[in-house]
Image (cartoon, rainbow, N blue to C red; front, side, top):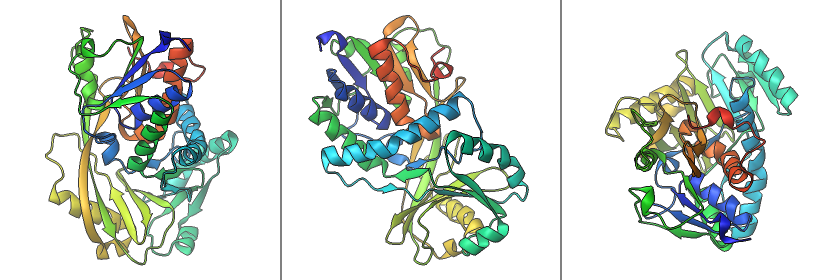
Length: 361
């Protein structure tokens, strides 16, 4: 491999780390530059690690295809990382149980259940009676069970990706903020994965954007201790207004619960959100009223203002600069497929995956 494909990746959240890992597997010279002192300290560090693809309601389309393709890669990716690094990466294969307060939810789900079966995924409906029989501590009108979906620990995933990439020759530089792309080392390719910091870097290219591509959407979560619930699956609960919450089993009677969705600027975390999360969870699981809160944390998710999520591909007018940004609430889920697309674009100039609907405009 010649030096023609030297790559600098800006940002070491889950997207940047996965891209670096996949590029390193191709023996490309990769250098990752991260502003913070450790990997995964931005949106990745605030995430709950729920890989929700098969149990997402939209039946089909390009974004659905990308999410399902990314999910398909995870079992193999986790197995490879454990073998290569020896890391213990908590990885929940028990699936996701999505429960609904809407008594008419079943009719809305019928097309998706049929579509998933055709796409090779197991997704089934549980009516109110079946739900109560199998999960007596939960209260809902019905729900779906997806055995194909997963959950994992985002921090451990990113640490394993960094170590595996380093073992393949990738270089990582931390505590090194980048203000302008012109400040970067010489490279044939630049890949921007810096989350909400990406707009500052893109501004240095004088693209003429009237406003930033991304907006921050706050989210707060809690970790609780709750003996007696004893569920292995992630519980995804949706109220009558369509607002949702995840209850993520961690083992030893501990759970993550979250996260809030806050578009208005807020100083997070806020104590009021702790009570709000517990109250919402208690609607679906009254036992939650007995939960002991162990900790709370918050972060901002990068959401595109006017484009589809995520934004992937070449920066107009700069054929050696690519972005993989704006994944919003699906960064962990879509990291493998985003990395594959970026690798395809660097190596071959295009990808067979349906990425163009996410391209920079």
